[in-house]
Length: 309
Ligand code: SF4
Image 1 (cartoon, rainbow, N blue to C red):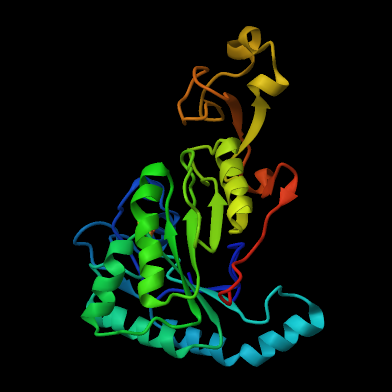
Image 2 (tube, rainbow, N blue to C red):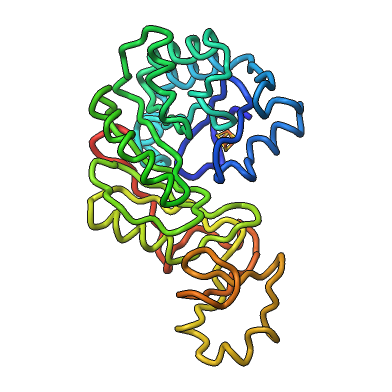
């Protein structure tokens, strides 16, 4: 659950001070952290469930920080890493701003995050309203210059609710860069992307497909606003047929060729199933690896500029 090295495409390592969380929105429905955690020890998810403290997290973060010179040299010599500073995702198995976590656990984690300033820390939360509460509760007035804050928004309602808060928090606390994690992306998002430095888009490794136009919409808005765009994955599903473009005779073939089931999904632009609505696509469940991470044939792997990520 903690690793000097990771399969997550936008980071170099993960560190977890604890496991466990409570689901707070539709993006949590198929939480991979819960599934993974349950293989080792159950009962850490939900309101009132005790979180599990992870030994060795502080030690690992220190080690990653102490290894900064080796990492930078390695990056220069072997061009193995696009950044000479190692990116570390803190709390990939929970939420750093979960208010049910004992305050002293949060305090220890935050102290270590602030200290380890030779790495770039990436914090992802679904609890933006808890950020100031938690920092206030440990009397911390510092937001470290080597840490960025990413908020998960999976649909338009979450975007409209949380992005103004994120923008305000960036200004108030002096956060060097902020981002959005739109994974799993569950619907179209349109809005003001100004002052958002980075957007990560990904489909779910699970039962809900991502319409290709949802990812394209964000890609194109990022290009217009100068926001770095990272297309992480399609997830389990990949577009097979664009009804309007590829299959003008779809009405004839619709039921015969493509039954709507667990392996094939008829998806329209609004996320509805069936062939009503705009931009109907046939999505096939081909698996995360096969689906890959190219959007219209192009890999998008930009990182924020301005911050140090
Ligand atoms: S906030 Fe993250 S860790 Fe917590 S339940 Fe939701 S997806 Fe899982």
